[in-house]
Amino acid sequence: MSGTRIDGLTRAFGHLADRRAATRILAAGSLGLFSLLAAYDAGSKKKKTKKGKKKKKKSGQCTSNQEKCGGACCTANQPCIGGQCLGACQFAVDDALKTMTLQADCATTETIVIPDQFTLQGDGKTIHMAGPASGYQSVVVANTAVRAGLLIQNSIGSVKNLTIDQDALQCDSGTHSAIAMAKGKGDIESVDIVVSKDNIECYRGIAAEAGANNDAVNVRAVTIAGGHTRAMAISGPTPPDGTSRVAGEIRDCTIEDAFFGMLVNASRHQITGNTVHANFGVLVGVFPSDVLIDDNTITGLTGATNPAGILYNPDTKGTVSNNATSGFTCGISIQTNPGDVALSDNTFPEPDNTSDLCFAT
Image (cartoon, rainbow, N blue to C red; front, side, top):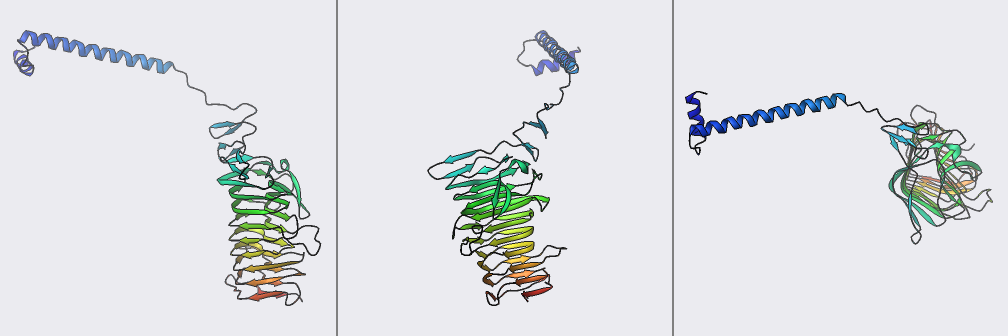
Protein backbone atom coordinates (compact mmCIF):
# COMPACT_ATOMS: atom_id res chain seq x y z
CA MET A 1 0.00 0.00 0.00
CA SER A 2 1.49 3.46 -0.92
CA GLY A 3 2.48 6.01 1.69
CA THR A 4 -0.04 8.51 0.38
CA ARG A 5 -2.98 6.09 0.86
CA ILE A 6 -1.80 5.13 4.33
CA ASP A 7 -1.53 8.80 5.27
CA GLY A 8 -5.09 9.39 4.16
CA LEU A 9 -6.38 6.38 6.07
CA THR A 10 -4.35 7.37 9.13
CA ARG A 11 -6.00 10.77 9.14
CA ALA A 12 -9.37 9.07 8.83
CA PHE A 13 -8.59 7.09 11.94
CA GLY A 14 -7.14 10.07 13.82
CA HIS A 15 -7.30 8.32 17.17
CA LEU A 16 -4.73 5.71 16.13
CA ALA A 17 -1.22 6.29 17.39
CA ASP A 18 0.82 5.42 14.28
CA ARG A 19 0.70 4.03 10.77
CA ARG A 20 1.56 0.59 11.93
CA ALA A 21 -1.48 0.48 14.16
CA ALA A 22 -3.69 1.75 11.28
CA THR A 23 -2.25 -0.88 8.97
CA ARG A 24 -3.01 -3.58 11.52
CA ILE A 25 -6.61 -2.35 11.87
CA LEU A 26 -7.13 -2.18 8.11
CA ALA A 27 -5.65 -5.60 7.62
CA ALA A 28 -7.90 -7.03 10.30
CA GLY A 29 -10.90 -5.16 8.82
CA SER A 30 -10.13 -6.51 5.37
CA LEU A 31 -9.83 -10.02 6.70
CA GLY A 32 -13.08 -9.60 8.59
CA LEU A 33 -14.86 -8.29 5.50
CA PHE A 34 -13.46 -11.07 3.33
CA SER A 35 -14.47 -13.62 5.95
CA LEU A 36 -18.04 -12.21 6.05
CA LEU A 37 -18.29 -12.22 2.26
CA ALA A 38 -16.96 -15.75 2.11
CA ALA A 39 -19.40 -16.89 4.79
CA TYR A 40 -22.31 -15.17 2.96
CA ASP A 41 -21.23 -16.75 -0.32
CA ALA A 42 -21.00 -20.19 1.18
CA GLY A 43 -24.39 -19.75 2.88
CA SER A 44 -25.99 -18.63 -0.37
CA LYS A 45 -24.59 -21.58 -2.24
CA LYS A 46 -25.75 -23.87 0.55
CA LYS A 47 -29.28 -22.38 0.41
CA LYS A 48 -29.34 -22.56 -3.37
CA THR A 49 -28.27 -26.18 -3.26
CA LYS A 50 -30.96 -27.00 -0.72
CA LYS A 51 -33.56 -25.08 -2.74
CA GLY A 52 -32.50 -26.89 -5.87
CA LYS A 53 -32.89 -30.25 -4.16
CA LYS A 54 -36.32 -29.30 -2.70
CA LYS A 55 -39.11 -31.23 -4.35
CA LYS A 56 -42.15 -29.37 -5.63
CA LYS A 57 -45.26 -29.84 -3.46
CA LYS A 58 -48.14 -31.51 -5.22
CA SER A 59 -51.36 -29.51 -5.29
CA GLY A 60 -54.03 -30.80 -2.89
CA GLN A 61 -56.25 -33.53 -4.24
CA CYS A 62 -59.75 -34.30 -2.99
CA THR A 63 -60.61 -37.79 -1.86
CA SER A 64 -63.28 -39.85 -3.61
CA ASN A 65 -65.99 -38.70 -1.18
CA GLN A 66 -65.13 -35.00 -1.51
CA GLU A 67 -65.98 -32.38 -4.13
CA LYS A 68 -63.37 -29.99 -5.53
CA CYS A 69 -64.50 -26.43 -4.78
CA GLY A 70 -62.17 -23.57 -5.69
CA GLY A 71 -59.08 -24.21 -3.58
CA ALA A 72 -60.89 -26.46 -1.09
CA CYS A 73 -62.48 -29.90 -0.84
CA CYS A 74 -66.11 -30.11 0.30
CA THR A 75 -67.43 -33.03 2.31
CA ALA A 76 -70.82 -34.61 1.58
CA ASN A 77 -72.67 -32.21 3.91
CA GLN A 78 -70.97 -29.09 2.52
CA PRO A 79 -72.34 -28.08 -0.89
CA CYS A 80 -69.95 -26.13 -3.11
CA ILE A 81 -71.59 -22.78 -3.84
CA GLY A 82 -69.79 -19.84 -5.43
CA GLY A 83 -66.40 -21.47 -4.90
CA GLN A 84 -67.01 -21.98 -1.16
CA CYS A 85 -67.85 -25.03 0.92
CA LEU A 86 -70.93 -23.98 2.88
CA GLY A 87 -71.89 -25.83 6.02
CA ALA A 88 -75.34 -26.75 7.26
CA CYS A 89 -77.55 -23.98 8.61
CA GLN A 90 -77.05 -23.25 12.31
CA PHE A 91 -79.43 -21.19 14.44
CA ALA A 92 -79.19 -19.55 17.85
CA VAL A 93 -82.52 -20.43 19.47
CA ASP A 94 -84.09 -18.16 22.09
CA ASP A 95 -87.08 -19.94 23.64
CA ALA A 96 -88.14 -16.86 25.59
CA LEU A 97 -88.23 -14.58 22.54
CA LYS A 98 -89.36 -17.39 20.22
CA THR A 99 -86.61 -16.67 17.69
CA MET A 100 -84.19 -18.82 15.73
CA THR A 101 -81.41 -16.57 14.40
CA LEU A 102 -79.26 -17.67 11.48
CA GLN A 103 -75.58 -17.65 12.44
CA ALA A 104 -73.90 -17.52 9.02
CA ASP A 105 -74.51 -17.93 5.30
CA CYS A 106 -75.26 -21.60 4.81
CA ALA A 107 -76.65 -24.29 2.52
CA THR A 108 -79.42 -26.81 3.07
CA THR A 109 -80.42 -29.90 1.10
CA GLU A 110 -83.58 -30.49 3.13
CA THR A 111 -86.58 -28.65 4.54
CA ILE A 112 -86.04 -26.28 7.48
CA VAL A 113 -89.14 -26.43 9.71
CA ILE A 114 -90.03 -23.33 11.73
CA PRO A 115 -91.52 -24.37 15.12
CA ASP A 116 -94.90 -23.07 16.27
CA GLN A 117 -94.87 -19.41 17.42
CA PHE A 118 -91.25 -18.94 16.23
CA THR A 119 -89.69 -16.37 13.90
CA LEU A 120 -86.78 -17.36 11.70
CA GLN A 121 -84.58 -14.26 11.92
CA GLY A 122 -82.14 -14.26 9.00
CA ASP A 123 -80.07 -11.37 10.37
CA GLY A 124 -79.25 -10.29 6.79
CA LYS A 125 -77.67 -13.63 5.85
CA THR A 126 -78.35 -16.11 3.02
CA ILE A 127 -79.71 -19.65 2.92
CA HIS A 128 -78.77 -21.46 -0.28
CA MET A 129 -81.24 -24.16 -1.34
CA ALA A 130 -79.06 -26.97 -2.73
CA GLY A 131 -79.26 -30.62 -3.75
CA PRO A 132 -82.18 -32.32 -5.51
CA ALA A 133 -85.69 -30.95 -5.00
CA SER A 134 -86.80 -34.50 -4.13
CA GLY A 135 -84.76 -34.24 -0.91
CA TYR A 136 -87.20 -31.65 0.50
CA GLN A 137 -90.43 -32.40 2.33
CA SER A 138 -93.53 -32.48 0.14
CA VAL A 139 -96.57 -30.65 1.54
CA VAL A 140 -99.97 -29.73 0.15
CA VAL A 141 -100.71 -26.00 -0.04
CA ALA A 142 -104.08 -24.94 -1.49
CA ASN A 143 -104.61 -28.35 -3.09
CA THR A 144 -101.17 -28.28 -4.73
CA ALA A 145 -98.14 -30.37 -3.74
CA VAL A 146 -94.89 -28.44 -3.33
CA ARG A 147 -91.44 -29.21 -1.96
CA ALA A 148 -90.84 -26.82 0.93
CA GLY A 149 -87.59 -24.94 1.52
CA LEU A 150 -88.71 -23.24 4.74
CA LEU A 151 -91.92 -24.69 6.21
CA ILE A 152 -94.60 -23.35 8.55
CA GLN A 153 -97.18 -26.12 9.01
CA ASN A 154 -100.34 -26.14 11.13
CA SER A 155 -98.89 -23.31 13.18
CA ILE A 156 -98.00 -19.63 13.51
CA GLY A 157 -94.60 -18.70 12.14
CA SER A 158 -92.67 -15.87 10.51
CA VAL A 159 -89.60 -15.32 8.33
CA LYS A 160 -87.70 -12.02 8.43
CA ASN A 161 -84.50 -10.34 7.17
CA LEU A 162 -83.29 -13.20 4.99
CA THR A 163 -82.09 -13.99 1.47
CA ILE A 164 -83.06 -17.34 -0.05
CA ASP A 165 -81.06 -18.40 -3.12
CA GLN A 166 -82.46 -21.29 -5.20
CA ASP A 167 -79.67 -21.39 -7.82
CA ALA A 168 -77.96 -24.53 -6.47
CA LEU A 169 -81.23 -26.48 -6.46
CA GLN A 170 -81.55 -29.45 -8.83
CA CYS A 171 -85.06 -29.61 -10.27
CA ASP A 172 -85.59 -33.37 -10.34
CA SER A 173 -89.06 -33.62 -8.81
CA GLY A 174 -92.08 -31.35 -9.02
CA THR A 175 -92.01 -27.75 -7.82
CA HIS A 176 -89.95 -26.18 -5.05
CA SER A 177 -91.32 -23.31 -2.96
CA ALA A 178 -88.72 -21.23 -1.12
CA ILE A 179 -91.25 -20.60 1.68
CA ALA A 180 -94.31 -22.80 2.20
CA MET A 181 -97.06 -22.17 4.74
CA ALA A 182 -99.48 -25.09 5.03
CA LYS A 183 -102.53 -24.33 7.20
CA GLY A 184 -100.81 -21.54 9.09
CA LYS A 185 -100.48 -17.81 9.57
CA GLY A 186 -97.74 -15.27 10.14
CA ASP A 187 -95.49 -12.62 8.57
CA ILE A 188 -92.96 -12.80 5.75
CA GLU A 189 -91.01 -9.57 5.86
CA SER A 190 -87.80 -8.12 4.35
CA VAL A 191 -87.02 -11.34 2.47
CA ASP A 192 -85.29 -11.67 -0.92
CA ILE A 193 -85.98 -14.84 -2.92
CA VAL A 194 -83.70 -15.13 -5.95
CA VAL A 195 -82.90 -17.53 -8.77
CA SER A 196 -81.02 -16.75 -11.99
CA LYS A 197 -82.18 -19.86 -13.85
CA ASP A 198 -85.24 -19.76 -16.06
CA ASN A 199 -87.27 -22.85 -15.22
CA ILE A 200 -90.83 -21.87 -14.43
CA GLU A 201 -91.88 -25.50 -13.93
CA CYS A 202 -89.67 -25.83 -10.86
CA TYR A 203 -89.27 -22.59 -8.94
CA ARG A 204 -91.87 -20.94 -6.74
CA GLY A 205 -91.39 -18.12 -4.25
CA ILE A 206 -94.08 -18.11 -1.54
CA ALA A 207 -96.92 -20.63 -1.33
CA ALA A 208 -99.25 -20.01 1.63
CA GLU A 209 -102.59 -21.34 2.83
CA ALA A 210 -104.32 -19.98 5.92
CA GLY A 211 -105.43 -22.44 8.57
CA ALA A 212 -108.75 -20.81 9.53
CA ASN A 213 -111.08 -17.98 8.57
CA ASN A 214 -109.48 -14.54 8.95
CA ASP A 215 -106.02 -15.93 9.70
CA ALA A 216 -103.59 -13.28 8.46
CA VAL A 217 -100.72 -13.94 6.07
CA ASN A 218 -98.79 -10.67 5.73
CA VAL A 219 -96.09 -10.20 3.09
CA ARG A 220 -94.11 -6.97 3.35
CA ALA A 221 -90.99 -5.62 1.62
CA VAL A 222 -90.30 -8.92 -0.14
CA THR A 223 -88.40 -9.21 -3.44
CA ILE A 224 -88.90 -12.27 -5.65
CA ALA A 225 -86.68 -12.30 -8.74
CA GLY A 226 -86.04 -14.92 -11.43
CA GLY A 227 -87.86 -17.65 -13.33
CA HIS A 228 -90.63 -18.40 -10.85
CA THR A 229 -93.85 -19.95 -12.12
CA ARG A 230 -95.71 -18.42 -9.17
CA ALA A 231 -93.85 -15.72 -7.32
CA MET A 232 -96.54 -15.46 -4.65
CA ALA A 233 -99.68 -17.59 -4.19
CA ILE A 234 -101.82 -17.10 -1.06
CA SER A 235 -105.12 -18.79 -0.30
CA GLY A 236 -107.76 -19.08 2.36
CA PRO A 237 -108.55 -22.49 3.91
CA THR A 238 -109.20 -25.21 1.34
CA PRO A 239 -111.39 -26.78 0.24
CA PRO A 240 -113.25 -23.45 0.13
CA ASP A 241 -116.47 -23.34 2.19
CA GLY A 242 -117.78 -20.14 0.62
CA THR A 243 -117.24 -18.00 3.73
CA SER A 244 -113.66 -18.54 5.00
CA ARG A 245 -111.00 -16.09 3.84
CA VAL A 246 -107.33 -15.39 4.38
CA ALA A 247 -106.71 -11.85 5.66
CA GLY A 248 -103.71 -9.53 5.77
CA GLU A 249 -101.71 -7.30 3.45
CA ILE A 250 -99.22 -7.60 0.61
CA ARG A 251 -97.27 -4.36 0.67
CA ASP A 252 -94.10 -2.77 -0.78
CA CYS A 253 -93.01 -5.93 -2.59
CA THR A 254 -91.11 -6.29 -5.87
CA ILE A 255 -91.66 -9.18 -8.27
CA GLU A 256 -89.49 -9.55 -11.37
CA ASP A 257 -89.71 -11.91 -14.37
CA ALA A 258 -92.41 -14.22 -13.04
CA PHE A 259 -95.16 -16.09 -14.86
CA PHE A 260 -97.80 -15.43 -12.19
CA GLY A 261 -96.84 -12.38 -10.09
CA MET A 262 -99.44 -12.54 -7.30
CA LEU A 263 -102.29 -15.02 -7.07
CA VAL A 264 -104.80 -14.74 -4.21
CA ASN A 265 -107.74 -17.09 -3.60
CA ALA A 266 -110.49 -16.89 -0.96
CA SER A 267 -108.88 -13.66 0.17
CA ARG A 268 -109.56 -10.37 1.94
CA HIS A 269 -106.11 -8.99 1.22
CA GLN A 270 -105.08 -5.41 0.71
CA ILE A 271 -102.47 -5.33 -2.07
CA THR A 272 -100.76 -1.93 -2.03
CA GLY A 273 -97.54 -0.22 -3.15
CA ASN A 274 -96.06 -3.16 -5.07
CA THR A 275 -94.07 -3.38 -8.31
CA VAL A 276 -94.88 -6.44 -10.43
CA HIS A 277 -93.23 -7.50 -13.70
CA ALA A 278 -94.87 -10.70 -14.99
CA ASN A 279 -96.96 -12.47 -17.65
CA PHE A 280 -99.95 -12.25 -15.31
CA GLY A 281 -99.66 -9.40 -12.80
CA VAL A 282 -102.18 -9.71 -9.93
CA LEU A 283 -104.89 -12.38 -10.13
CA VAL A 284 -107.87 -12.67 -7.82
CA GLY A 285 -108.64 -16.35 -8.27
CA VAL A 286 -111.66 -18.54 -8.72
CA PHE A 287 -112.63 -18.77 -5.03
CA PRO A 288 -114.85 -15.96 -3.62
CA SER A 289 -112.72 -12.99 -2.55
CA ASP A 290 -112.96 -9.32 -1.65
CA VAL A 291 -109.61 -7.72 -2.49
CA LEU A 292 -108.33 -4.14 -2.58
CA ILE A 293 -105.65 -3.53 -5.25
CA ASP A 294 -104.34 0.02 -4.86
CA ASP A 295 -101.30 2.07 -5.91
CA ASN A 296 -99.35 -0.70 -7.69
CA THR A 297 -97.15 -0.56 -10.81
CA ILE A 298 -97.72 -3.63 -12.99
CA THR A 299 -95.91 -4.27 -16.30
CA GLY A 300 -95.81 -7.19 -18.73
CA LEU A 301 -92.63 -9.02 -19.72
CA THR A 302 -90.79 -7.58 -22.72
CA GLY A 303 -91.23 -9.58 -25.93
CA ALA A 304 -93.87 -11.90 -24.39
CA THR A 305 -97.62 -12.27 -24.65
CA ASN A 306 -98.93 -11.05 -21.31
CA PRO A 307 -102.63 -11.83 -20.87
CA ALA A 308 -103.65 -9.58 -17.96
CA GLY A 309 -102.23 -7.01 -15.56
CA ILE A 310 -105.06 -7.27 -13.02
CA LEU A 311 -107.69 -9.98 -13.27
CA TYR A 312 -110.79 -10.54 -11.13
CA ASN A 313 -112.31 -13.95 -11.83
CA PRO A 314 -116.03 -14.83 -11.46
CA ASP A 315 -117.54 -14.62 -7.93
CA THR A 316 -114.94 -12.12 -6.76
CA LYS A 317 -115.22 -8.46 -5.83
CA GLY A 318 -113.16 -5.55 -4.58
CA THR A 319 -111.64 -2.20 -5.47
CA VAL A 320 -109.03 -1.37 -8.12
CA SER A 321 -107.63 2.17 -7.77
CA ASN A 322 -104.53 4.27 -8.55
CA ASN A 323 -102.72 1.47 -10.40
CA ALA A 324 -100.45 1.89 -13.45
CA THR A 325 -100.82 -1.12 -15.74
CA SER A 326 -99.00 -1.54 -19.07
CA GLY A 327 -97.80 -4.06 -21.65
CA PHE A 328 -100.72 -6.52 -21.44
CA THR A 329 -103.35 -7.92 -23.76
CA CYS A 330 -105.77 -6.55 -21.18
CA GLY A 331 -104.63 -4.00 -18.61
CA ILE A 332 -107.48 -4.64 -16.16
CA SER A 333 -109.83 -7.56 -16.75
CA ILE A 334 -113.07 -7.82 -14.74
CA GLN A 335 -114.71 -11.20 -15.34
CA THR A 336 -117.18 -11.07 -12.46
CA ASN A 337 -120.63 -9.53 -11.93
CA PRO A 338 -121.01 -5.90 -13.10
CA GLY A 339 -120.53 -3.48 -10.23
CA ASP A 340 -118.75 -5.99 -7.95
CA VAL A 341 -115.41 -4.32 -8.62
CA ALA A 342 -115.07 -0.53 -8.18
CA LEU A 343 -112.61 1.14 -10.59
CA SER A 344 -111.06 4.56 -10.05
CA ASP A 345 -108.01 6.63 -11.07
CA ASN A 346 -106.11 3.84 -12.85
CA THR A 347 -103.60 4.78 -15.58
CA PHE A 348 -102.25 2.91 -18.59
CA PRO A 349 -98.79 4.22 -19.52
CA GLU A 350 -96.49 2.87 -22.25
CA PRO A 351 -95.98 0.18 -23.37
CA ASP A 352 -99.60 0.21 -24.42
CA ASN A 353 -102.04 -2.52 -23.56
CA THR A 354 -104.00 -4.07 -26.43
CA SER A 355 -107.07 -3.11 -24.36
CA ASP A 356 -106.93 -1.10 -21.16
CA LEU A 357 -110.19 -2.44 -19.72
CA CYS A 358 -111.92 -5.76 -20.43
CA PHE A 359 -115.25 -6.94 -19.03
CA ALA A 360 -117.14 -10.24 -19.03
CA THR A 361 -119.48 -10.52 -22.00
